[in-house]
Length: 169
Image 1 (cartoon, rainbow, N blue to C red):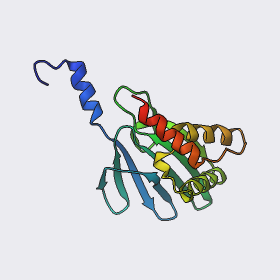
Image 2: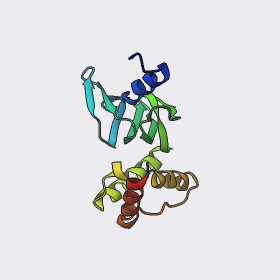
Image 3: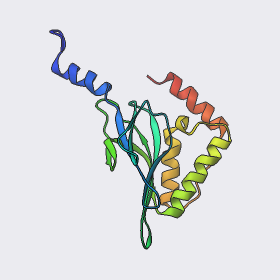
Image 4: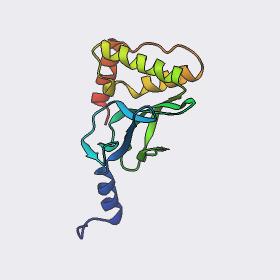
């Protein structure tokens, strides 16, 4: 901290550089955590079954968590998150430090599988899932939670989002 820097400014600068860390675990047919989409800026390999990915503030990613025991699947979850910026409110999520701005959350294999298909359709249209409008992910979350079919994400809608994003401060 320089003499002209206030403690508040120093903390804000420190938080701006803070990455969101996601611990991924892979124990075949037991515990499987993976990133479906997202641009990690750093990877740390802890051991042969665990690694940690780091995401810049504001970046979006999808985390899939699956676990089973001798009786079958015990957990299936998919979360689409935005890495929080300094001062931004966020939700705590297991294996995500400090947490993330929740755009979509679903659980149960049929819903997780449906979300993976929705992501595949978006990418098949030539759109990077990382760049999809956060509003669309919220729309999909709400429609799936209500048992309704979400509207598809079109290239026209995507171009409008990119234009809107380019003029936002």
